[in-house]
Image 1 (cartoon, rainbow, N blue to C red):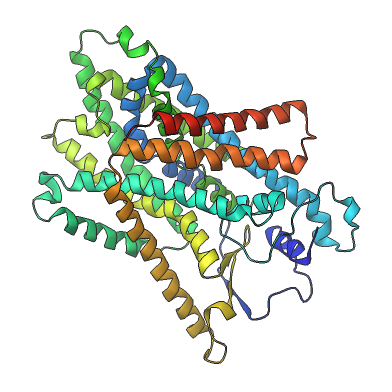
Image 2: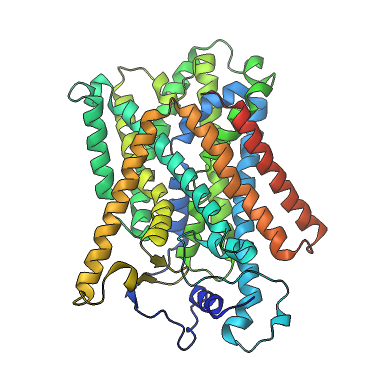
Length: 477
């Protein structure tokens, strides 16, 4: 069934005027006057989203399965993850195309709609394109599942980042000699709480550019130290580094490889911020970012394992000489970069909880934030926009700080980094990145697409199920 709320939601998505009398009573719109995110900043944001802690675990994971499988396998997974994002955005295009006529002419007969979908509600859930696609395909009941998967995925990234930062700064040569681990956790949590007040993705894109620039020093340190170790090795290309394939470690490899694709959800929000008319315009940014990151990650994983072999630790920089000044600088830079990454990866989580708990509605692809007035402020006590905005901001700030604190609590009970990357990568990322796009596309097209298209969806679905199973079975904490 097609309702007025569905028409209005798609008009907001396509920057069309709303239907007369369709706006919510007692709702206010806060203009943000944002401009579209440029392709350059979009690529930088996606690259920064993927270059986090996952890449540091790749040398050890590559060694577990051997390079003959790890190198082509990781590149394939990078390309596949980019395609799953594109598949979801293609679903978004399908839904908009079917309802564009409905959004502009509500007199259109229901029989003109090619498939039946659940009516979209007026409220939003802060889930980006997945929100419209999931609700159009399955109805509102899918939103808790999608929201929980996104929260689990993004929180998994942040937990891993927190563990690496704490493990690095808690060393005696840094802050370990000045404060206890508890005090260090408190200080870092306070810093992140302050940074969480940054609300706009375009501002985070600028910070991502700075972080990506300084992160290049980390790769320089790996090349410098790794090449020195390789120069001392008698055999540069040892057969045992490439074969036999470590089948027993396939689960950990799949989970970590998927975990390294840390922008698989963030890229959907980047697409919204670019305000493009179709997913085809996003293809150069999407595949350029994912494949570039794939080449870089594969190089790091292969070089790290070739240099340190079976002694490779779960975070590769821990293999560097502890007394090296360059390494110390690289580790501090890494902590700065991961701090920015936490805020970047928390963006979808905050959007979801603000929408569901506070009623903050970030409408897709146009520069407005709608907040339900009756949910946040008593009309009898409100004396103008200033008190309304203050009340909303106070609750939003508290929510953000609670989410940051929850990340630290989870990080305190998770045993090691490989456990985080294996479970979160294989389970939650597979659901959002592989299973939901394939199932939604099959549902929206009613399996009436081309044989190739149906085959691709079934392949993505099979990859997602296999990744979930192998990741859960193969990951050992």
